[in-house]
Length: 157
Image (cartoon, rainbow, N blue to C red; front, side, top):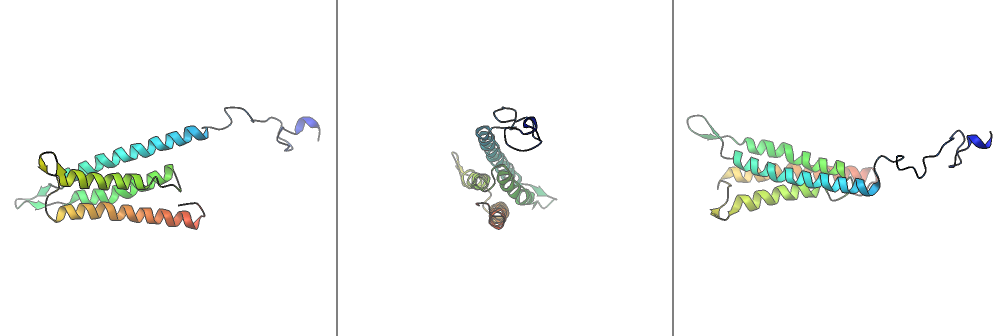
């Protein structure tokens, strides 16, 4: 083996080195952190929009008798875990997955129970409780599952 075949990193067969080359890493660490924070902020905005949409859907009724159709609870049960796991995918092992769930819960509680005109937009019956439970419980289970997964694999969580 001659000197031309040994790269600056001391590995045989490694002729060139990408050390110091800005193209060697696809995204610098600081930029990755900023992009991850932006992604979590977008998930938080998405949580607000979903909470408002789900509260609007609480008034849906079907049939001549006006039977309540709690499709909002189904949507909440499906979307809050997705938001939590999405935030975990962006910033694994951090507290970022709490952000979408907390924002969704606060939006439903504040906008649902209070408005400048008086009562909020949540109906004063079982549908409001169902919406809160359907959003918070699956989201909290996703948080718990995420934490257990990180503990098993040795990552902080």
